[in-house]
Length: 135
Image (cartoon, rainbow, N blue to C red; front, side, top):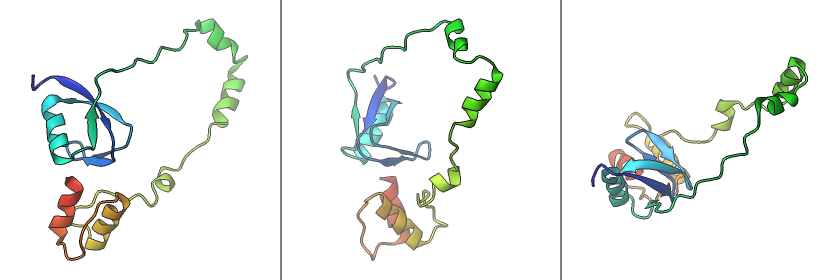
């Protein structure tokens, strides 16, 4: 049963070190039973198994002709595309601390911990602070 695939839901933000990515509250993803046990053991109450997955009903299928009717010509498509707002990725991620490494300063690591509401003491060493992030 260890290789059984489970769907789990994130209850508190955490860094998934197996893929070096932050998992956010409400996110649902699949893991093996073994990986779920690892996460749940290290981070109590950060994830939960989802037993009943409710499938969202698919959107009513429209014929290609109905979809094409929306645009009389390619100029309409270009106009619609130009109305889509753009987002500067650097600007959007501004202020979000990256996952620190041993190359990071203690201040950078503490800023990351603060951003994630992780408690630490001022006298902790760099390695101890980094360990808190990976917990």
